[in-house]
Length: 421
Image 1 (cartoon, rainbow, N blue to C red):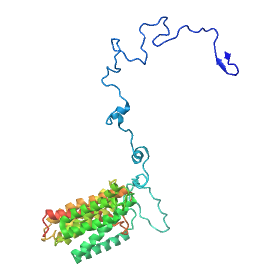
Image 2 (cartoon, rainbow, N blue to C red):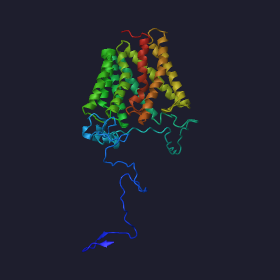
Image 3 (cartoon, helix red, strand yellow):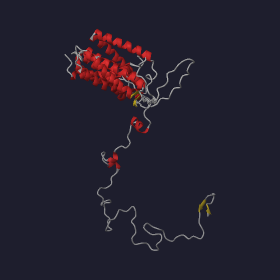
C-alpha cells in the first residue's frame, strides 16, 4: 500500500505474494487454456459471418426483413397502437368503485329487501279480567291468515259496502258515470303502485304514468281498440323524453321500465272497461266482472278463515288452498246464479250457457290476478300497496283480481258474440 505524497489518500493497494500476469486475456480466449484458441470469436463490433465463415457486407442479410428504427415504422403497425388509452370516466368504470354523482348506481339504487318467509310472532296481549279471547286456529301453519293479518274486519265490511254502493249507483246512472268512476279508480290505483315502487328504491315518472293510465281507459271508450297502441306508443316516447330532458336523470333504464310496467299492468288491463262500455250492454259486462270478482274475494276470505289449513303459495303465505277452492266455487256460483240474469250474459230466461263459460273463465283468472299482485308486493317488501281503503289496504289490493277478470270477461263476450255493436 503506497501513500500519495502531500495527502492522506492511498494511491494503490498491492497484495504481496501475487505476481502480475505476463499476458492479458482477450476476447475469445479461454481463461483456462494455456495457448490461444485458433477459433477465436469475433469482436462484438465486427459484422456477422455467414455459415462458410465469410463476412457479408450487409449485416442481417440472412434475415427476411432488416431491422428498422422506431421512427421508420408505419403508423398502422400494431406496435404503434396505444395501449390502455382510457379517459377518466372509462378508467373509473374499470378500476374504481364507480363514478360518484347522479349517474352512479351505488349511491342511488337501493333494491328492496324481501320480507322474511315467516314473520316473527308478536307477543300475545295480556288478557284482561273477565274478557274472553278467541282461541287460535288449531293446526294452522305459521303465517296462516287469521283475519287478513289482523285487519279491522268491521271497518273492512263498512268500506266494502260503501264502495259497492258507489259502484251500483254509477252502474244505475249509466255509461258515462261508470266510465268516470272506473277511470278515477284506475288512476288512483296507479298512483298507489308508483308510490309503492318509489318506496322500493325506484324513481318512476309518476305523473306521466297516471296520465297514461287514464288516457288508456278514456281512449279505449272514445276511439275503441285503435286508441290503445297509440297511447302506449306515446307513453314510450314521453317516458324516454322524461329522463332525456332532465326531469329525472336517475337510472333511466330501470325507471322507464317500471313506469311502463305500471301503465301496462293497471292501464292496459283496466282499459278493457272502456272497451266493454262501447257496447250498449257494456255496463252489464262490467257489472258481471265486478260481481264475479267480489264473489271470489268474499268466498276465499270466509272459507279460508273457517277451514283454511294448507298454505297456497310462498308468495302469499296468508292464503290457503281451501280458500282458493272456496273462492273459485263462489265465483262460479255467482256467475251462474246472479250474472245469468244480467244482460248480455242472461239475455234469454233459462239460458245459462254464457254465464257458465264466464264463471269458469273468471274463476281461473281471479286467483291469478290475486297471486300476481301478492308476488309484486313481496318483491317490493310491502304488506299493502296503499292505505286508501280502511280495512282493505289500497285500491290495488282490492282490485288485483279484477284487473285479470276484466280482459277475461271482454274476450269471453267476444268469443260468445255478445257484443251488439
